[in-house]
Image (cartoon, rainbow, N blue to C red; front, side, top):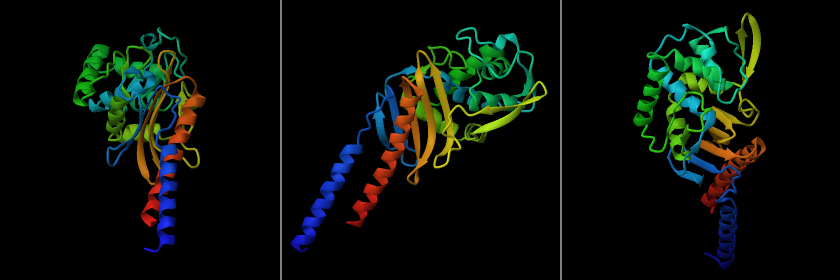
Length: 278
């Protein structure tokens, strides 16, 4: 190879190494982060991924799987009662006491708009009641081999609901096998009747449906103890990424982390193409 060509190749390689180093480790604002290539299982980015922490409403992915595993009638009408009220955090809800919904609609509300009363009603009407639901949740944790996950209730309001980012990736991966979960969490909004009047319920992840963002499964979470959390299946630069972010102080910090992940994926793909062309 001529010296000029050798020099050009060396410069190109140094440029690629420099680019790789600058993007190899994102400075995450979230306290815990994990990004995995779905197809290969390769860990691409991580931060404190093996340390357990509260997961807030990301719990609802497990709640939905447990309900769907039981193959309960999805068209059965369920009435919201006082037993479904949040007495821990006193959060608001779009479903008032006395309103009725199908079990399918309650799943949508719990997943898409993260409604706590909807999740509580799903657990309350599980065979054996809330105790039966909690037992089924424990079995699901064991079945998915979640070594560092503890879930004591269906909403995520309890700070005792905790998991590692590593376990959350397993939960996210398992959730992709449920069409109901994928469909509910990948819609930006849904018009639902409450006591005869139509209301628009929106996805708590405002990136869903936004131009340029391909998100096929998503669940947010927030409590004072958990901070701002997000898990989602994101397609970027031609590959599907399983993303878990936990413990951000603010939604704006979580947004920056997500944007950096997508930027990193695009830069990584560009570097790979440039390397292949050498």
